[in-house]
Length: 501
Ligand code: BES
Ligand code: ZN
Ligand code: ZN
Image 1 (cartoon, rainbow, N blue to C red):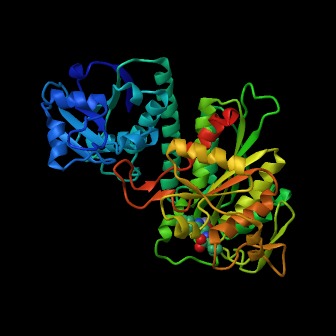
Image 2 (cartoon, helix red, strand yellow):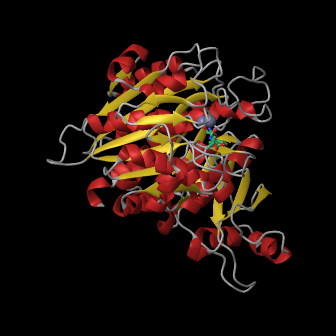
Image 3 (cartoon, rainbow, N blue to C red):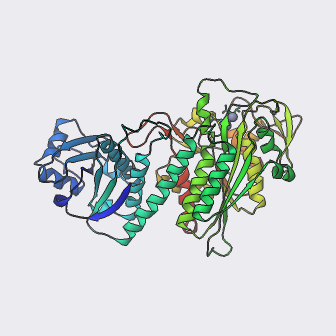
């Protein structure tokens, strides 16, 4: 899809469709806002005003109405999309509005779309980047394996119509494209079924990303893991005939800040989670191909970071395994020794994410990472706690958490802080080993995070449990059903803002 900034008068625009955002109107007498919407109302002889008065359209977030052959305009169709209340409107809302506009117009067969950012307040760089992201993320469909392409519609060209062409807006457009394409790349990895995306294939994809965008890539295989003593990662892997891989992607800035941080991004890469011997019920098990969504977000984030070149050292770690109940699978009660030396009693083989991440965390610390962020579809319990709206955030460092929360807010990715005080540690006691891999029934997302914390020790760290947010159960006006790619933008934003935080 071609995306460009275009400086043009409203009346001169030529496209299959134009889209404009309109804010909620506080009363029937209140002005229609922003100014571009008011101008459109005048040009179309009060069409918008009538629309509001009919009560059919109130400007609520992502409400939409379509006008054919708008008078005084050359575009064939005009779509108005509600932006909600003006005081709540920001780049996160604009991202969604752009996505919803694109999806609506694509479904109606438009091939060229003009998205109006004529109001200066809508055209600042942050908004331009968000709008580009909204368009590209909204365009994405996880339909690669549908062979009948006859019904497929495609928007080929999007113009962001601005009143002033500023270099900062052009830069923002390019940054938005890099980030959204990386996120769609991550979504593609997540949609791949487990027969096509094994740990070996995931490692191969990471190698391709590295060579295309200029990252170092190292993949540790099972024999190297054995040599190092990664007993937790190997224990999970041994039930599958697919070999495991620990993927390491390294970004080294050309001119790093002296004495600066070395960030480690970790992502759970379980290409399929049957549960192992503690096998999951068959209903819904097909969804467990998304158990590598954290890993995909890390690979995607590294791809964007390689292109955006921030002055911070960042290394991505993705422990990749398939959790299967094979003849050599680990059993409940098995005791395994981690890379850190701590022993773990595996009470439930379905709590595998924390096992593989624990060894990856120790490895990241050994490579010198000063700060750690991880994303993992770790527990069903976080879905019980927060639903499909927020990811849960756990930390041993409030300052780092604040960076993550600020980044997430700015990027429109919802994250909510969860507790992690030492009292929860009492729930992780084993009579036979240093620590069990599960607690009791209660607070499951917290005990999972607590388990990770035992391996993180004092390194500043934030853990994001994305089990409820990495996969969209139903499509939304601005997003297709399926993988979301979250929290890729938050990761990238934390890195880009590192030195200003
Ligand atoms: N991958 C699952 C968590 C999950 C559940 C992700 C639902 C997405 C949707 C994880 O490996 C798991 O099975 N966790 C167990 C832990 C339990 C055995 C302590 C769970 O949440 O049930
Ligand atoms: Zn599991
Ligand atoms: Zn899992």
